[in-house]
Length: 240
Image (cartoon, rainbow, N blue to C red; front, top):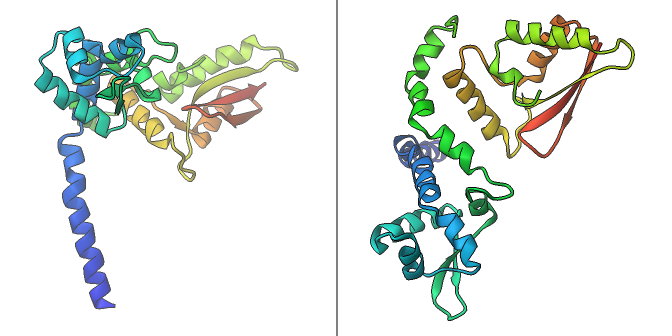
């Protein structure tokens, strides 16, 4: 029993030695993905229509092969691009569903949002996140209500409540709902968005269902329903 406990403690220590590097170099993924977008790597491979060798990619981009290889090695390790053979049997780089979201003007592109969130203007508030925690009273419908504190949110919802018909109307809110007791594949995203709200707004936050119920009740809504969808957001319908 004692030996098993010692082994478990040792395994935790070993894991901690690995995990700590995520926090030391956690910025690296965002920086390298931003680099790939700025260089136009996903757009170039997509336009080529087939896997590209390192030589083809470096020549098209006008980049030196050695640093480009290291960037692609990093991104492939994280599953953003994949390695495969081209029509001549040479090793090349190919797109994945994830890399296609980095195309600047693709159908499901998230490139603009990544460039925005990784810009110096939006990164700077993260360095003052502790000040947000220490000074919670600092002053300053889809993806709207999470920008505001409870009081402002209640005032907005009161106006919406006044505008809908008593028996037929409803207000539809498409926003994140943090389910603290139920974890899914998008929980990390919702919690990260909550940190983004703390960094980028004065009082904004992602809310739990209980917190949504509070602001809706204070705004005069008699009942509400919440429907989860396969997305970061959920759909909340509030009724007078």
